[in-house]
Amino acid sequence: AYLICITQIQFYGKKIMIAYLGLKYNLLYFCDLEEQAKDGITGRLNPAPLVPETFDADYDYVANVGPKAIFHTSRGARNFKLVSIDVNNPAESAWVDIVPEHAKDVLEWSTGVAGDKLITCYMQDVKHVMQLRSLSSGEVLHNFQLDIGSITGFSGDIRQGEPLPPTHHFLGP
Image (cartoon, rainbow, N blue to C red; front, side):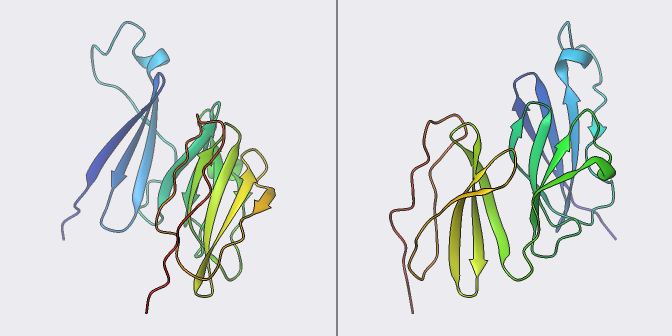
């Protein structure tokens, strides 16, 4: 048996998030360059695991609030959820559910917007449902009124002042 992995490296200021992507699941590691490379990268870095090293769940970075990173994950949540992981204390027992798993609807994606908010997109029955939420608490601030159909794109960024609501959807045969 072979394990095929792809590595993704993302820089967040003076910190690095490293994702090892397997065929189905992934692992996440974190490295603080302010601690490990004060005088530049002169040797091997020692990234610390952020999630259990078991290749049994998906983890997608959504946003962060200081040292707390928000991830879209299937860990313990077949329909996915959003969890906050403190990079200074990444033990699973310290994780906080920001948006718990929904009993029926699947949380397909989420992104940070407008500095302190999240957009979440669920598949509800046969259509997408989109919500604006608080980044810190996960509380629903606004439900976007959408007709039946699929959301195929979204434009927004955590550094922008206001998210752009979806303006087009397509209902096909």
